[in-house]
Image (tube, one colour):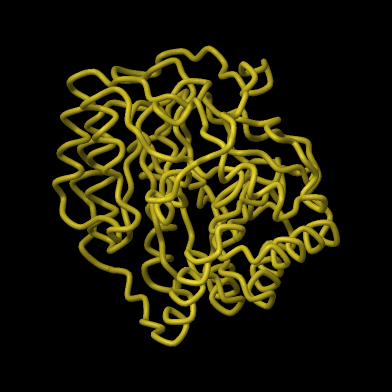
Length: 362
């Protein structure tokens, strides 16, 4: 690991140009959503389940699925526009395996919503980055878990370093790197975080969770690495902070009002709506049938899993409404099924846990 960490470049550094007019329009959209509780804030759309990697902890991919047809995805994006979603994240699988990924970014933008893209980064080229610039991509998230690939995670700093340089030199959009503590020794996660900060990217650190989405308490070495990463300086805008993770670590639970299914939700490759990845099947309603009535029900329903939830996009999308009550009946959640449960994993090295790890999508 030391050779990777010791060669972290101070340059190139991301020089994203400020876009005050666009940023002001986005702020107005967020303020509009704050006043309208029937309006989604962050929605996620699976555009392909296929992936070019095979990470040991991941059940969100396969090697055979065809990309979701462009016409189907445009119909789903059209419906999200009717619901007035502010942000739309295109995700996978590996989103860049979809042949129309850039066109989909452009379509989200043309429909008046703000496009984000999740990728593992391996397929990035200068041409793709410039295409995403031209299509109006606002933000990209990559996950980098360790310094070198291991049995559990292939999303690693060493092979992705050339891709990070390309992003730093050519991207006109926000770049956010998520590091999952638990897929590798904590020192490797720290090396990744330092590299990310050196490039000028936004850095996020998440912790392992079990198949229900609940946080698994890290060992002392992992907790120390987490605190050191937090001490690297301003890593994210304040509204995207991970302070909720520290509260969970300190107290085991936290009181907050999750608005999944309303302010945020996931649309799978079949076009069905789910609260989040750990809660696939709930509610399972086809997106094209999803209305403000569904959003209202989920907005007002307390989620029994919220007290131990470390899922970033659920926390971030729910921040607007912490002061609002949840008057509905508590949501009844089924136990995780085999399709959403994690596989047993071999320990690749010290610090690796045989468990499902936290993945953003948010």
